[in-house]
Length: 142
Image (tube, rainbow, N blue to C red; front, side, top):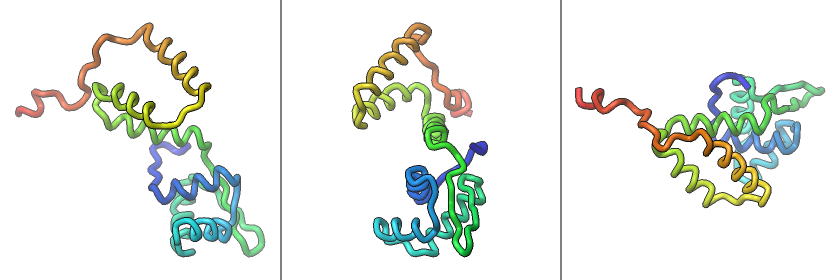
């Protein structure tokens, strides 16, 4: 994935479709997105162009139609976005935040077992306390 790519909420909707379909024409995407979100064809084409400019989608011309393909792996993109969000939180709050996320999102039994195993391994070397990684208090007082 290209380094530090920002994907808007609307672009995510297109990418979720492309990852599911593996490829789609702008007409197919417009039909699906218009039905669900009442988007105009121009909106879909603008978003597709932005995704192409960011190198997140690849375009192939097939006759008069353009076919769009995801150019980045779904799981890796999700992880990049999530880690970017986590990086914006003071590390003293990350654990509680993850706990709240886990409480709220649906998980399979396999997901839960995998999480338990990961946490068991992390526990071995985990500190008892994390320091704030925000600006230091002295910087705020100056």
